[in-house]
Amino acid sequence: MRKMMVAVVGRPNVGKSTLFNLIAGKQISIVKDTPGVTRDRIYADAEWLNNKFTLIDTGGIEPDSQDIILSQMRAQAQLAIDTADVIIFVVDVRTGLVDADYEVANMLRKSGKPVVLCVNKVDSFQKFGNDIYEFYNLGLGDPFGVSSVNQLGVGDMLDEVIKHFPVETAEVDEDDSVKVALIGKPNVGKSSVINKLLGQNRVIVSNIAGTTRDAIDTKIVHNGKEYTFIDTAGLRRKGKIDDDIERYSVIRTVAAVDRADICLVLIDATQGITEGDARIAGIAHESGKGVIICVNKWDAVPDKNDKTMKEFQTKLMEKFSYMPYAQYLFISAETGQRLNKIFDLVNQVRESQTLRIRTGVLNDIMTRATAMKQPPSDKGKRLKLFYMTQTAVEPPTFVIFVNDQQLMHFSYTRYIENQIREAFGFPGTPLKFLIRERQAGEDE
Image (cartoon, rainbow, N blue to C red; front, side, top):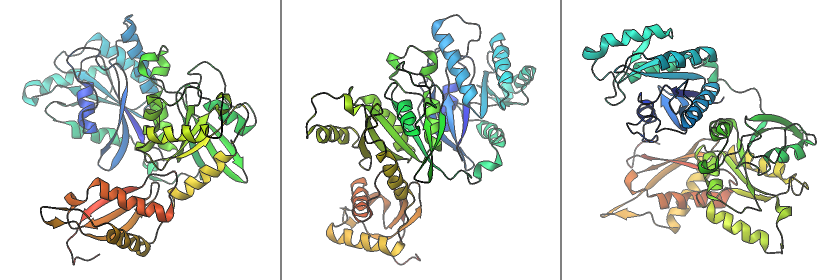
């Protein structure tokens, strides 16, 4: 099942970004004591009491403002509200209740979503404790006093948030079709690819960037096997976005990636490879999904010869060097060129994602690898690899037990990964490695 999505909303300068960073556990949002600094919604994976969720930060809501930037932030926050499963509504105990808080509260009530009222900047419960009760007037239930800066009261507030998570999120999804998300910049042909595969115009196709605003699921049966293709809103570099709604479609793309098994990253062959392409692919990579890089509009590339495709793929591999496992396919949604190979590649990547290797075989690979390349040492102490086992799939996850975690450099972990890939391939899927410390002679 997909992860829950929790949006942090409120008027400007109430401390949303500071709270967001605290829950996410790292400095992601820009924090500055100026209203309207967080103009773009930012997302992060978060966890509380073993409940994993996606946290959405938003720009401040000014319900009645005609200012262009503030109205954009209002549209942004509304989309976050529509997308979220639970909403954290942040208010400021120091300024007290203001008209804008009532307006935001009305927006939230209309959404019908669960709302947790967070009264921020309660740096001293002795000083501000009684002021918290004023916020009962919003009619959104019990207010939770917190201090994002001093990290007070946040745990109780998050306890309330996860109460709204459905128990069935832990259940197995009955839909056993392979779920494939198409992601990429606007106008690279995502909808056209699905339409060509489907054989009928199920998804709206337009040459206007940003036509597909929501993730749309399309079921396709090929050779007796069912696939769910998820068409997502196109992503575009922030400086080139004119349409407010398109600006914030990244969250729905993140949500689509989260519930997909495999991502097809579409690139426009006529535009070449851009930083935006790398960023978009990074969403799938960071989520541990299978990745196939599809270069669309290959038919429109002029003056091709027998070396053109290889040269283009070499550039792709350089750009996507952080994901060497990615598979590549050159296609044309217009002519249908190589589109059927998508199914073959998806099947291949899916097998990789779910492949399990016996522990004995893994340890044979590890023994041979350490014999061929001696583990590193530091200050007279050499790394020893005792044991390796696979603990999960999607993505395949391996635990290596060593004598000293600090000695297990990234480069040697990558070396072990390469040895496993040499033996089993694992095309299209990342591999995850967990390093655990164990002393020689301990039980396996």
